[in-house]
Length: 177
Image (cartoon, rainbow, N blue to C red; front, side):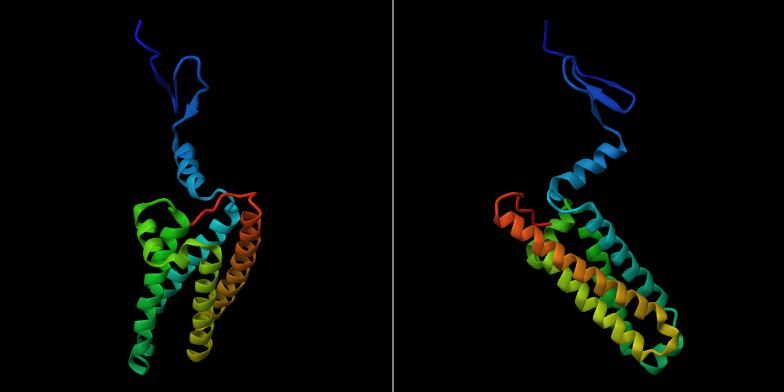
C-alpha cells in the first residue's frame, strides 16, 4: 500500500490520521499574518492599516482642490509624497510577508520595527497638521488625520518599546515587520 492519501472536503484538507487543516480564506490570512506578527498585537496592524488608508484617501481628495493648485502648486508635490508613503504603509501593514514589503524593509530598515514606523507616522502626522493649518478651515480632514497619525505614532512607539524590552528578556521572537 502506498502512503496515506490526502483528501479535500469543503474548505478543509487532511491526511488520514492527522488533524484537518483549514485551507479557506481565513486560514490563508492567518498564515500570511501569523508568520510575521508573532509578538505584534493585531490591533497595531488594524490601527496602522486605517492610518495608511486615511493618508491615501485624504491625499486623493486633496487633488480636487483646484484653487489651491493655482495659489500653491507646491502642495501637489506633498500630495504625491503622501500617496507614496500611504501606499508603502498599506503594503507593510496589510501584507507584511509579501515580496514588496520585504523589498521596502530591506531598503528602509526602520519600516520593519514598530518604533521606526511610529516615527514615520509621527512625521507624517505633523506634516498633515501643519498642512491643514496652512490651508485654512477647509482642510479639517488634514488636521483630523494628522492628530490620528500622531496618536497612532505614540501607540506604535510605546508598543514597540514594550515589545523590544520583552524580546531583550527572551520572551518573544525578534520580528522585523
